[in-house]
Length: 234
Image (cartoon, rainbow, N blue to C red; front, side, top):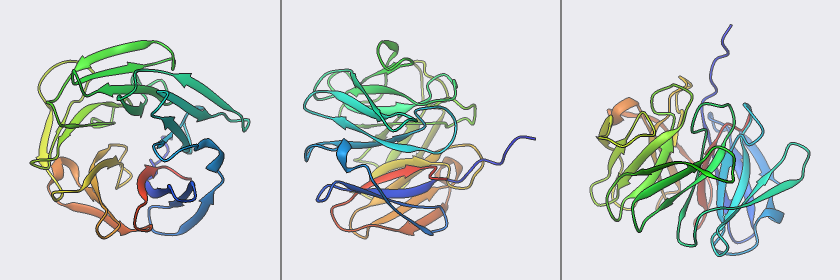
């Protein structure tokens, strides 16, 4: 019997005290994770993924200054992976459906995704999107593999592809308001990611139904100045 997918939950990273708090999908507070040792500076980027195989997502970090990922292992240790260049945007996904998350980056200067299956070597390189757009990756097709996408902050339009190949978007829709931060999640537990946004002005997460036709999820969580996270917390 195929297990029912877990709907995504939300969370926040609080730069002031380097803490992570997580909420399940139905707003039951799950407490604060002991991840502060991973974070070392104000420019650190929190990341979520299932680094050790299918299951609960855990929090890792990307250090902008050194272009380095630090990811937790199942035994409580961490592994460090230098990857990409300073100025790249860090990405996390299961690029080929292998069952675990690996790293990647998006290089704004040439609008190119560089995705790795082994956390060391670029396996996939794809130019996609336009200057000024925000990269986004997710399991848009339900295949189990995370694929590329991009968000135009000027129009609040999402452009999502079902494969990690060059070409036109398979899903194009508008969702959210000017100033929102684009996010993604499996908001309804169907096994398919759809777009969403985090609205810092009211500290709210909003998830769209497929193709952005309507709002399917909304919750308020966190404090002013927090950074949004989405994951399967268990």
